[in-house]
Image (tube, rainbow over all chains, first blue to last red):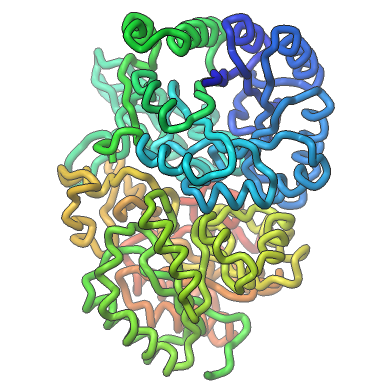
Length: 325
Length: 309
């Protein structure tokens, strides 16, 4: 199985390539990609240089243009696609039907991957994208169990890529407006979720309160580590019970299920984390590459090391395991 | 069938799990009394709930059609299981009614059959709208998240499609494989015992500072605030919006529909209607922030609207 690795900066890109990534995914420094964070992403020049470097090492580059085109400003996304192709991108990762149609028509030889943001969660949906836009691969939403993936794999006409490590969306990706409800900025439209520009921390007595826009997302008593107020990982009050209503502050780790994913027909394993630093990317890619190449009985120590790199060191198998539901 | 008014009113599918008799009686009353032109029917949130409405489906459709309403069947929003895919496929093959697509699988199986597009399908621009129209979409209800600038742009570039906007109700914001509603009551999705039915208007999610924020409805999360575009109807009609969607809440939806109709017909001013709407549905504050390119929870008052325009 291929290992698909994140890069938010040219430095992280080089680290990922050197650590043995089969492909690196990244995006332009604008609203065309779903990690549109300050200080991240690539200029045209940086992308061209990065792709050239990757090619010398036999590593592929996937360019994410996976937000939805703003009405009247489609040219920004069209130009992104044209430039990524001119830079030598091996695949474009797309979510918007209008953009998929544009790329399929104008660049019929360009390899097109379906972003997780497109919400293709079943065989009919995936085959629709294959037939309509000649998609070669789908990144599956984090709403499926491994049994679901195995069943889907038998009836679709393209490759499957799944998230195995890093951040975890609790909601079906590409179908969530929670962030914009609180801040006006959303993954679909702006490429951001719970943006830092709308985050505030304030002291309340001995507690530290985190806020997103006007809403309190969490409250940490003295001594408890304060996490980032990602909306769906906040603590709320439901029917007078206080707690993590949607999901605990955990990250995804299904590396323990590599054999099951392989048996399910998965072609590529994806690491989340374009917002991560180059040291993290280098270490995670190196360990995961070793894990993928090791026989199952010798993976234990590697997976333990990987586990220690997870956010807050608390991990979940997410929807891949049925009881998570 | 009575002549459909333009702009027309659409009653959205009931998102919440109501007991069967309540669901039936609600639609009977809408058929008899509400000035809506089109009614969407079907369980769109959770496939486990499907059997609740089935015994009453035929009589509800009959009553609505006798009253001159167009009935449209709406499909599931999140399709992951084989039986869910099968159900969407069978609906597309067997239905003699117009269908509304709520996910990509429905789009796939409805190709070249006339259908409508729900606000849960991501239509953010005109090229996407045109692509869907070429595949048979007749009406597109745009996502609640869209600002008016995008709505105007899309409508202006796709004169062949009828566009609708989500004009009343708590906004669908997210859907998950995980059921936060069941989990809040110590259960999980697979053994939920339909505890979401205990809250016919959703389960409030407050912040730790007791701010009203979100509402759980099974696997769906909707807003706490209730979208109201009463003050924006004129602008939307001028932009070419063809119909307005009223999403059922647990309140007097006949009165809600009458208010929207009265404002559209110029029989009532928006300010008066907004004041009345707050009395009809006092459970939630009103919001229109998305329309004004603000946070969705915001309410932009009319005076500021006027200054802005």
